[in-house]
Length: 390
Image 1: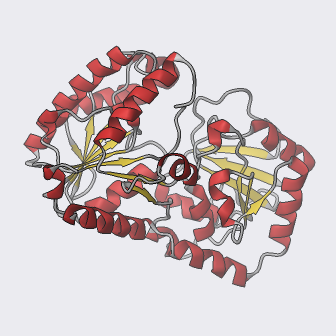
Image 2: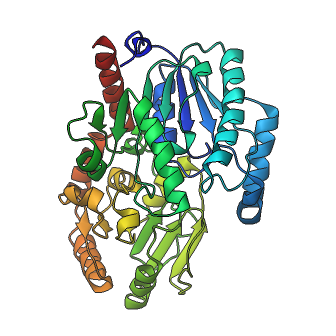
């Protein structure tokens, strides 16, 4: 550990280098940044978007560029957001292009830190594509939050770029957190920097607003209502979802979230409803109308380190949860049901819904209460403080 890292104090500012934008579907990035901001000044950096994004996410790209032009924006008393400048395309295929983009981004970050009087921040890196942190950052401790594997085993140009940037971040990191047991097993053995830190759930989910009428979009749907909340993307198993809808045409399958880069065709059965994204504050109301929460993800190399945040949100709502056997949540068998095939999935849902009781719902909420983001942040700060004393 460097002398700079040893001098780092827990009360210092935090530079949060995020791989997603602030207004994207709420994930670990936003929850941790908000948790840090309760006691630290935080500058949350959104990675830049290139013109190549215009074809698949035009409105989002234009908004990002406008945010960059406007400068740092406030998201709370202690939290500021910086949108990185427009980027050159093909960054995931050509390391040289990514180096140019990072140089431009870090120049803007240095200026933003200076304008906010944030000196020697702890640097929290949640995406390897940020690469090595340049010396001019005047950084303190560097913490890498290795959320999931991103193709480091892939033998391709993209895989080589990813491995190069990942190695840079790992080499610079004073601490490494991960919600992935597989990453811990494969890379953390014998490395004292590694700490297992699962996802969590916001305290707000445990103390929802007084009961209100169900959302109008689902109030008249046939029950049971099997709900999914989150990004509808490559991890979702469209074949499985379509089979579930055909096996139980009298059930309602409700999906809340943005459809992004989906490979293939989503099922269009009359009992499958795509409601689009909803504001985070409204999600507990929707989940309160569900009969169960489902995680119909594909199981394979691309999802072996996926640890869905929605698992804890379903449990905080007291819902029965049924998922495909994702490796990262198989240890939650006491509160999550698993099924590999469509018929098994339906049978497990029937079992979970039919056997649901107020006592079981209370037990699920109790489990969620022990796994809040607030407690995760406290654990992070404890480890950072202890590391700084070494």
